[in-house]
Image (tube, rainbow, N blue to C red; front, side, top):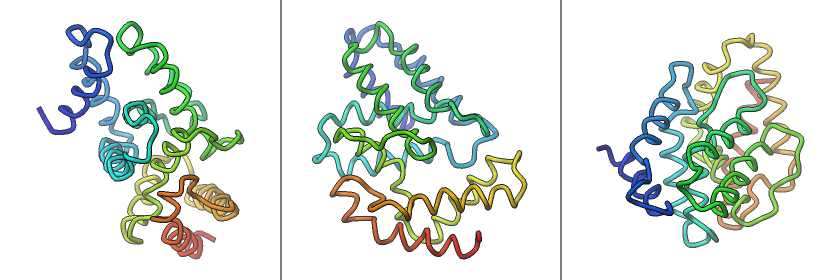
Length: 212
């Protein structure tokens, strides 16, 4: 068992209402299969592992870290390039595999956290609860990495969208980057704002010079 699988299994079993019948192995197989799909280059288990690391750094600031961690595992489990409902379908997948296994209050909270990540690309209200703000910040925290890694991630996202021409990708990515810069702040939580805001803005500004 890999460290990543062991971490998921421990979390899933710990959160389940009946740990002896938690179906952790079955759910892990789904996770491993979906995040290993051949059309993925960015939305892989590497992204999940990075998000988990970001959560670990901020765990003492999070209201319900187990719920946020569950939402990290499932927020991109369904990812089909070009579709606008990946987050919704990911939330529905989580609801299906967790039914009768996890407490309903936890399932509802995790579902809301998964759907909060739609804020990045959809015209919906920004997250308001502390946990949803942490989830959104964690998902975007890679924008504050070293510029070289940020560039590699952008290229990985390009590989995931072969249906777009180079010009279409440049336009859509530039529009998204500009929308982030237009925010008063990219990161909602004080923790990630203080740690990553300036670096993320520098990365985005430098990337836009090559996209426009």
